[in-house]
Length: 194
Length: 166
Image (tube, rainbow over all chains, first blue to last red; front, side, top):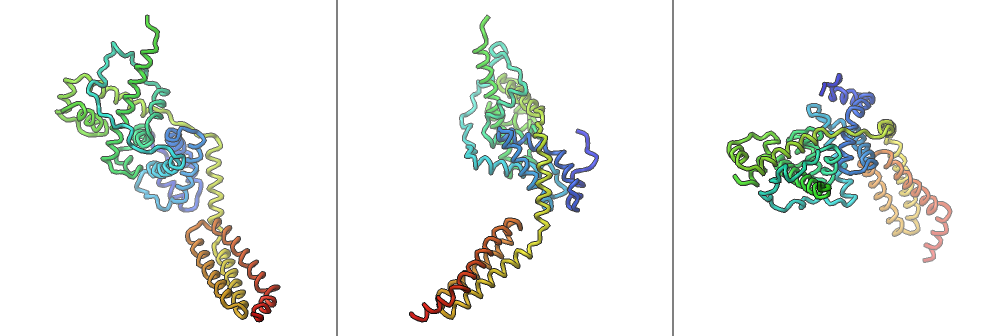
């Protein structure tokens, strides 16, 4: 990714000095990332847009508390995390972590290519797989891979220890892989036999 | 190393952990875990290449308009609101003093109420954004002034007469 001409921290400084133009650039620069994250977390374009608006307004109001040494995007994601959590709680979405209690079957994943016609892992399928994960797992995986945050940054964003992030990532990957394999089996079953 | 531990180690390795000899040894003899590694890599890569979505065209203009409104609201000084609050509290206190000549118990309660209202007003100004506190304080101030006018002007002599009888 190419470096922007003006660093985020300089834009924040401009904003703190009363120049709202600085925030307009920050908004333009980060709105897609924040919106994408919230859309994939809530599953609804309108909710995601409303939440993204809340995130940027909160960010604007708390710019004075922003640590200029930190990446601006991870600070934004921390605000987005809290906004999304409040929203999902209000919507009575199940945020529990008790979705993956079954132990790992050693034979799991052993289906060879002769038995499974491997479905292409296209964008639409990935979106379906990620949307099927419980929100706490989905969020960790999105921040880590779709947004490219390090484990340390994910932990700071979600306000949980790094060890907990690693456990969530492990479980999220397991769940996602199982769902992918289940999808492939369904596809194979439904495919017409020669 | 069993399969469950191997899969945990695979996940850690993908998050920057060092691949160890025990994991490598397990993978060389376990087709299932090797497949898990390959699939997990594919999933991570697919997640990393998810396209960024764009909000509607009205989004950024909406946010910037809200920011302008927020800036304007922040520029409203809090002191006129505080002054209005103080004035209404004084009005209530004055009403209470005037009433105290006739019904001391009621007057005491009103004075106490005025003090509580003033305290609530000061707290509201401290914790609420100025416009919201302003709206609520203005409504309360109107009620306080109306109360003062009601109890102290037209009905006060009547009240005193009733008080004198009892």
